[in-house]
Amino acid sequence: MRIDIISGVPELLSGPLDHSIVGRARKANKVDIFVHDLREYSTDKHHKIDDYPFGGGAGMVVSPQPVFECIEKLSAERSYDAVIFPTPDAIVLDQKMVNNISLFENIIILCGHYKGIDQRIRDELVTMEISIGDYVLSGGELPAMVIVDSVVRLLPGVLGDAESALDDSFQDGLLAAPVYTRPAEFRELGIPEVLKSGDHKQIRLWREEKALKLTKERRPDLYRNFIHKK
Ligand code: ADE
Image (cartoon, rainbow, N blue to C red; front, side, top):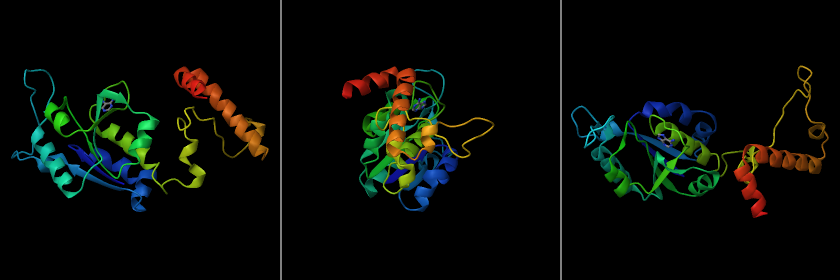
């Protein structure tokens, strides 16, 4: 998979893209990620990428010129399955959407900033709008990193068998069961006996029971869906 990220503040992206699972996946060529500085596409002599909103109002709006030129240049080089724009006024990302995106070959993620982006960009270039939750962040960079992280960990060969994504919360529609590591006794705090038993069937049953209980308590909406699907 190839991911092109367009941002006016590319500095925000270097940490999350260079470390941990995403960083390792890039080094192992399981994913190609390229960051494009929107300012480099601006024809303005000060490399401005935003302007005041028509009709007045607070904040600045990302201008169409640099975004159109950047996306047109990329699209001339290869075809993209999606041009994704993270924005709070969109449907909220869930595991099913993440799974679908992970099947794409090439995607662009366009990070907005300030007050928003010129609507003509959304009308003409963006094919998928995604919110990461009902709260407002100052720009699209952090949501872009949420999308990248959630997608890259699903790509073939990125996670080892031991860290299989199939065990994640949400992959089966339930929250994940609690996990423990050594030592089995820490400050007089033990762990559930069954996990030390070596009885894989009992362990699986224990995890299912915990997952059901947690989901029922914390996410009754998911629990109802799960029960109805069965
Ligand atoms: N940009 C600002 N806030 C956002 C959110 N909640 N989701 C996606 N993009 C955003």
